[in-house]
Amino acid sequence: MWSEWLKLDNLKWLLQTAAFPVTLALLSQQYQCAQTERQAHEARLRLYTELLSKREEADTGVRRGIFDKVIEKYLQPQPQNFDEKLVALELLALNFNDSLDLSPLFWQLHRQIQQAQRHGGLGEQLERIANAVKDHQIDTLEAVGAIANETVSFAELDKSGPLIDRELSFADPDPLAPAGQKVKHHFSVEIVAHDPAARRILVRVSRDGGQSVFWVDMFDFPLVNFVRMSKSERFSVVLKRFTPDDAQLTLIYFPGSRSGVKDKPFLDEVISDLKRKGS
Image 1: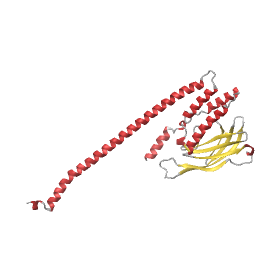
Image 2 (image 1 turned 30 degrees about the vertical axis):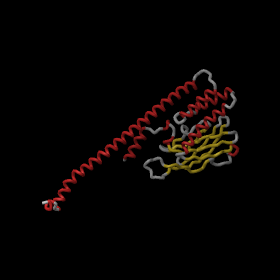
Image 3 (image 1 turned 90 degrees about the horizontal axis):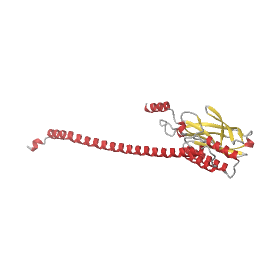
Image 4 (image 1 turned 60 degrees about the vertical axis):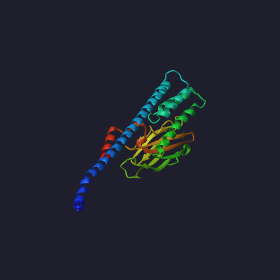
């Protein structure tokens, strides 16, 4: 009886009959495991997002409190000690250098120090604060862009050619660009004039497809004082040092995504990019 039942056809029927529920059970188990893993991943993502949001809210609250107190202290109408103003300006520069153009505040304090004919190194302290901000911003932009440093002698301005004449490049920030692709431009920087009294320089920057002429002074910062070349490219010229005899300039070529808060993309640009990436 058993030998008849264990014929090949019966065995095939038995395996086929048993295979369906086993396969269904395995698929169900795999689906449950995948669902559990997906839910755990989503829970971790929600927790991470909530933590980031709370951290951003806390940071924004702290920065808002610092800004309100410092700007109130800095702009109060009654006479104020220059040392206190320097401390207030340094706090603003350390916390808001990427979102505010602080050049007017630097120049205001510089003029007040000059008009008061105060000595004791106040001008040097003001310049130290400005240089610290510039150095920090240059380091930040150099990590994703390209820079060129040169020193110009005012005695040889009429004899020399372009102060900077070279090609600069950085990795293409477009996520759809091929790996290793770079964006690049050839820059030529010329010194047109200099103003010793105001400690500033008039520069002419020529590059592929355009030319810009503008003044650069000791209180210009690259994250907020720059030229918009295209949707994704920016450049800035920074005056690192100015003496009666010479000056040191830095040209920075960097992605637009790293510029200050005031240069955030327009809504139509964001929508256009999303459509392009989704196509």
